[in-house]
Length: 269
Image (cartoon, rainbow, N blue to C red; front, side):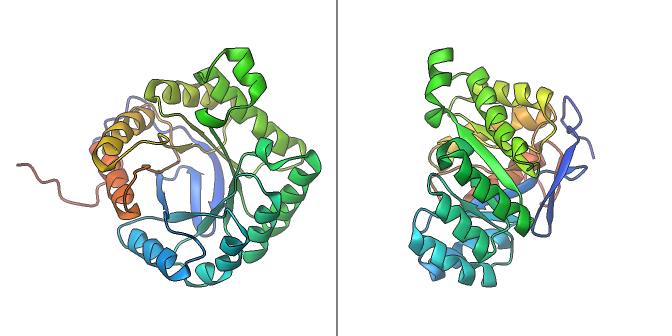
């Protein structure tokens, strides 16, 4: 198959999310995120199953409170794909998610709190054998980086991601995936380029706050298309203010357009 790639996909280290491998020689893995109240198990599973049916291989759920964490065991028991718990600030919710059996965490170590709290999360993830995605975005950069760079920049995003990955490395944790998301496409692309030159961790690529179905799909197609074309991206999500099914379909269309995936006939009208 002809691939419209300017560079071959960069070979990164392999990270396992349940039975799904990210990185190495694997093709980019499509994932999505539910937009339900996670504590509503029925609605959450309905979205997970629908997204899985159209090709999502990993699903992420928000865990903002104890009710969401309490719902995880039932969700995990019935999910057809590995589940990632999205944690923002409360390290106790990360610990509860690990205990529930999630297959991966998405955190920003700098937002979890003290080093001791980060160590607790890292040790629990090590014991459970699950990876951590270090997720940074332009809207939540550390104050010292904003002061240093003046405003969110590619360099600031990259520095934040590598700094936070370094926190985990210092604690003996290397089963890491990195993501650096900005709503500005050129800034995001350049941030990934910077990080890819300094680390071999798998990259989760996406454009944050991409927007409504059409606007978001276009912005994601441009940003993800550029990244994948230059060989970056081990797993991807198209972020839309829409049904996760639409995110998955859009992701596959982007991969198909680059010749990375070929799962559906191309219709020319």
